[in-house]
Image 1 (cartoon, rainbow, N blue to C red):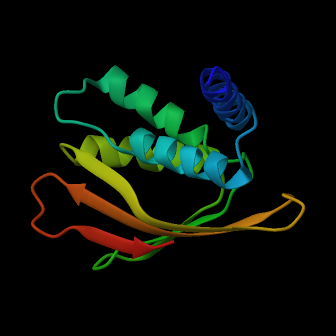
Image 2 (cartoon, rainbow, N blue to C red):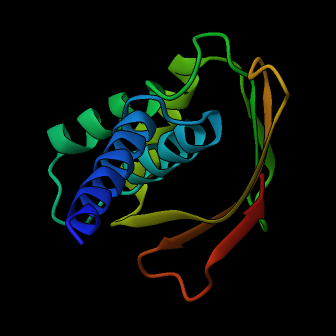
Length: 142
């Protein structure tokens, strides 16, 4: 009778509260996925960007790394290179932005394992990059 509208209203209120809770308290896995999406956007750049936009993009890219990071880069057909800190990452990003017309970066396959207490996580990531003018897509496991 009259109870159905109240039950529907109560169910809607519970669903809204659950959505708000998830929005305000995201899981560790969703935070990591969001950071990886932001990193992919920061690493990508288009042909029509000027020098200042490319420099700002490189600056944004290094914001995803700690200052004392150690990154090993192994691009097929080229040599392996190690970047020892955020400044080297920025310089490398600026050099790649000067050398290539555009680069599109994506992480299409991400597997994240978060420990029970959310204190650490391991992310297995597949990098997919398309460089303008190159026929082959770069695919790397990270």
